[in-house]
Length: 108
Image (cartoon, rainbow, N blue to C red; front, side):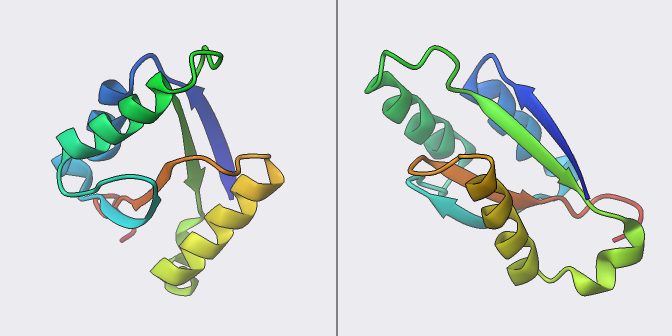
């Protein structure tokens, strides 16, 4: 597994990238987010960020990339487990998040 960490400029930009229809993203888990639509996800993040003006860089995106050889071992539940463990070890706790799985890649 390889992690790529990116600080975003806006929730709208990150969410539109993550939930782009071409990526066939499936939201596997979410905390503190309304997932009815792209707009509701963006609004949820923006609302929470507005409640804590001390945080200057509130937008982030972490891509966990797995080997194509492991695709048969990576159920949605396993991916959520791995992602939550990663977030905890990185100190990403007590915050909103979504966990998505892209299905458009060639090895799926």
